[in-house]
Structures are given as C-alpha cells and as structure tokens.
Image (tube, rainbow, N blue to C red):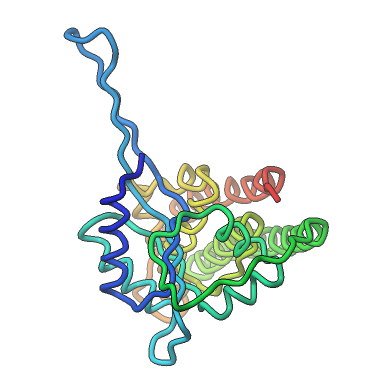
Length: 271
C-alpha cells in the first residue's frame, strides 16, 4: 500500500528538479516478500514499492526539452526511489482533455494527484470516442507489426551476409517499433525516442510481460540488451562496435517473442 509520506517525498523530489504544475501517480511495481518459519502459524508477508510511474505536467519550456526534464526528475528521485517519469506540456494535456484523448482522460479520472498548482486549471474531459479509438488502434497495430516484421526480415538477410553491425541496427529498430506499438495501443501516447531503456520502462507500466523478455536483472540478458541499445548509433557510426552471431541469434529470438507479445497485447487492450 502507498503511504502519504511516500507521496510527499516523491513530490518534493520532483519539485526540486522541475517547476511542475501537476504531478500524477500512474502506477507502481510492487515486490512481495514472503517468509515462512517454524515460529509462526502464518507466513510473514510484506509488500513494498520497487518502482513508481508518474506524469509531470509542466508549462512549455524553451530552455529544456521534456526529455531533459524527464532525466532531471528521474535523477533527482533516484536517491529516494526508482521512478519512470512521463513529462507533458500542461497546455497540450489540456487540449487532449477537451478532445477526449484516451491517456489524458484516464489520468484525469483515475490517477492520484500528488501535487497540484491550483493556479492552473484542467479542462473537463470530453467524451472518448471508443469506436474511433478502436479503429485507430487497428491502424496502429497493422503499421507497427508490419515494421517489426520487415525489420526482422532485414536482420535475417544481413545476418546471412555476416553484416553483424547492420543486423544489430535492424534488431534495434524492430524492438523500438514493437515497444512503441504496445505503448500506443494501451495509452494512446505517441512518443518520439530511440532509447530502448526508456521505452521498456514506459511499456512496463502497461505490460508486465515485456520485462520477462528482457530480464535486465540477469547479467547476461542485460549485457545483450546493452548491445541492442547501443546498436542505434554505434553499429552505424563507430567501428569499435562488435557483436557476435550468437548474440544476434539470441537477440532475434527475444525480439520474435516480443513480436508475438505485440499481437497478444492487442487482444488485451482495454478502452
């Protein structure tokens, strides 16, 4: 369970990093600890929060991008807890509310508000056009899964030709578009980033299965993920980037599982 002192500490950490208009709690990842022993009749159980997901609304800032603000927030919170921050312009969020945008409407209706600058007011959300969202999701899914399939096909071709660096780049692109598709299907959010770590954390808010594919708490899996993460830049522009055929095959297997996950996630989307 969450406690008010955790809310306060989290909010204070965010406000040290940025000037926020609103801070919303979107969710958390919890860890359950269960101990059985000979001295008690019932197991000792404890649940603690491992990771928070928050939305921070800010006024438009010409000096810092939302990506920079996100990094500042997550860095400031790191001494207290692990956080993934979504950062959005307050004005943009208000426009989304008026239009009945799925993400904004869900936040308005369901999220816990951790901080509210009362001088800025949110619009009442418009009605969600659920039929339109379903039609849009069909387009998002078809376009996303097609890109994943084509990048995987490109990776297979380059691997056969022993072009390991280009293979890695194609696998990065397949992963990126799979994660973007999962996030957009569930939330309606369209983000622009090539950072797989960030996308993986975003998607972990809506799908617990993503972390089972990229098990970053396991050293070998994390090593391969880092190779994949670096592939976007280093595979094309740095001659020092090296990756073996074995690693490429293992990564390909993971990304094919991710491709299947995209197809399954489409069936579980709640509108």
